[in-house]
Structure formats: structure tokens, C-alpha cells
Amino acid sequence: MRFISSNGSLLSSLLIAGIALGCSAGTNDSSSGAGNVGGSDPAAGGAGGAIGSNNGGAVPGGSTGQFDPAGGGTVNPNCDSGADEDFDMDGVSVAQGDCNDCDANTNPGAIEVIGEAEGTGGGGGAGGGGEYVPADEDCDGVADNVPEPCDASLDLVGTDPFDGARAIELCKSAANEQDYGILSAAWVRANGVPANVNAHMGILADFGPNVLPQAGGRVLGISSGTARDALDPGYINHTTTINGPGTPPPGFPQDVPGCLGLTNINDDVGLEVSLRAPTNATGFRFDFKFYSNEFPEYVCTSFNDQFIALVNPAPEGSVNGNISFDSMNNPVSVNIAFFDVCDPGITGEPCPSGPMELQGTGFGPGEGGTTWLQTSAPVTGGQTFSIRFATWDVGDSAYDSTTIIDNFQWVANGGTVTVGTIPVPE
Image (cartoon, rainbow, N blue to C red; front, side, top):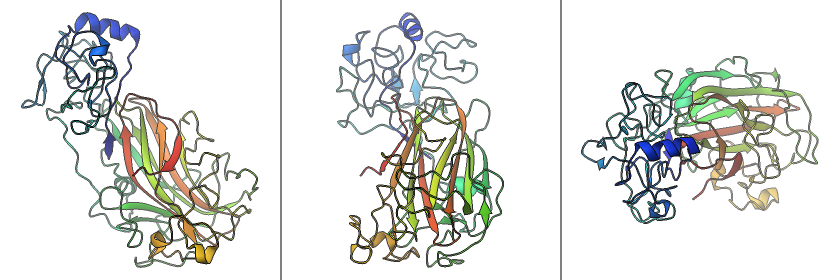
């Protein structure tokens, strides 16, 4: 699991007023991310640090503590709080392990935020120009400690659903009610009932020689055929039937605007994870690619295999809880706007990404897929929620489709995260 550098944090006016009284002006506390030595003037770089400034600007002008790199924390970080007080109102008292009660983004339930190098934006909002200084957001005594990937040695046949989560960098289990991470994981059918472990799911070292993990050493594959590339043991060409008829979640299969589809699904499979977000998280994101035998013959027909990422509770901007679709509300299928990995000489389609990422996948040059896409969605810090990654055949049990998923990341930037899917930024 990875994390995104923070560029701002908004607290209520009551909290800001309280901090103004309890945290005297002084040199910036790195975890507040103000980026400048200054007083209470936000123009000095206090309110809303840019990328590279940790949890930027919760306290105008910074808090009382000076960062001590050798100690991995701050000097006098607690704003004169008593052991049982919760000055920053983050739900964690000093006695419960809050190592900086001036900053609501710092406590044992937060995730470390790794900033950018000096000169790439590490400064306070209006003031700017500050130097990024490491901080210990998770209060473990070490600043900017980066967890190691946990998927390098996972087996292709992932009988343990937690291995499916590890394959997408969801490594950390929540140790207690204050902690963030995985609460549960299960292989499921599209409607959430338990699924048998079979070739519909796989933990892959790659998907052909030209599609490598975005992070760690493995990717998760889920398929209405076999979640294998052409060289993997157990691969069968993508016209198989394993799970048989399934029951879609309410509101699915989703019709493509202008292209009415059938309503029955087959060979559905998925991974469902329940998570608790870090207390400083504002959202999450993950990367995926979708491949289908249906391209291009069945574009805008009744046979539109689909992939969904179903979030519960449903975030604002989702479609029946699904957060993966393009700007025209097209679900992930052969109709999505980003379906551009193919051979134009064979398919007659534009194929701007060409056929290279089809090689060795088991999908031929006359079929197709998407580039790496990234879906984002908002979350409230400390929130418990679930994500069901699922795929299925629509209308038939042949002409299969495969989704590979990787690189789950928490977003801890104090700003607004909206539901959306875009090509992975370079």
C-alpha cells in the first residue's frame, strides 16, 4: 500500500480558534506542513501547504514544536495537552498515543505522508518556498518510514483472499479500532456471496511481457475466463465457462448510453475487501486494465462484459456504488473511452496505444484492452467501507474478459477527492 503526499488540511473554525490559543506561534511543526518559520500570518506559509509539505496548514504559521530529525518527532508536540485531552479533536488522546496533539493529521491511526524533494512544491500555501521536512504522522517514532511491498512471493493460485488484497498493495491489517487497514477479505460472486477458488482469479507476476506490476511484485487478475496470461499454468483460451450463471448487484449490468445490453450475467467473480481508512485520508485510488475478446466485434451490442468497483457506502458521484466509469458514464467494457490497446491494421480501430500490451496475454491482436487506468474516490478519515472488485460476462458465457488490478494507494492530501477514472498519470 502506498500513500500520496499531502498538500492541505482543513479544520473547523472552532478547532482553528482552539489551536490559536493552545499552540503559540513559532517555527513550523513539520507535521502541520506550514512550510515556513512564521507567526500566525497565513501569508507566511501557514494555511494549506503544497505537495511535499506533509499535512499542510492545519495550523496557520505552524505549531509550537520544532522538528527533531534525530528523534523522528517534535519537541513539545502536545500543545500543553493533558494525558487524557484531545486538543486537536482527532479522537486520540496523548495517553492513547497521539504524539502531536496540535495536529489532527498525526496520531497512531494516520498514514505516513512522503513529500517531494526540495524545490518541487514543499512550501506553505500563500507563502510557499518552504523545505520539505520529514514527519512521523503515524506516531511510531520513525519519520517517513515506508512499508515494504508484501506480494513478491505470492502464488499464482491465490486461495487466500488476503493474498488477493496483498497483490494490490493492501498489506496492512487494522490492529485495533484506532488503526487503519484491512478488516476482512473474501473471494465473491458479483452479488457478494462467497465464490469457489478457481481459475477465474489469479495473482500474476505480469500479464504478458509488456504489462508489469505498477507497484510491488504481483497484480490481481479477475476474469470471466481464466485469470492467467498465455504462459501461466492453467491458462485456457478466453471462451470458457467455469462459474456459470450469476446474479448481478442491484442496478447492474449497467447499460451503456445509446447501447442497450442484456441483463443476465455469467462467470462472475470478484474480490471484496473491508477497510478502515487512515485518519488523515481524504480518498483512495487504484490502477487497472481491462481486456476483452468482445472487442471490436461487440462494441455497442447487447454483449458487454463489465468490470465494476462497488463501494459501500456509496460515495457521492458513484453510479449505484460503482466508481469505475469514463466521463460519459460508460461502464468499464469494450465501450469505455479508453479502450485503445489493439492492432489498427486488424481491428480497423484507431488503437493509439498499439498492440504491444496484448503480447503474451492470451488476447490476440484482433482483440483489445485499455491502457493502465486509475480510479479515485473520496473517503472520510477513519471511515469503514468496502470495495468489491468484480467482473462478468453479459448475455453469454463465451468471449471472456479479464481485469488486472494493482497499486492501491491512500490519498492523504487534505483536499477534495472526487470519483473519476483517467489514464494513469505519467
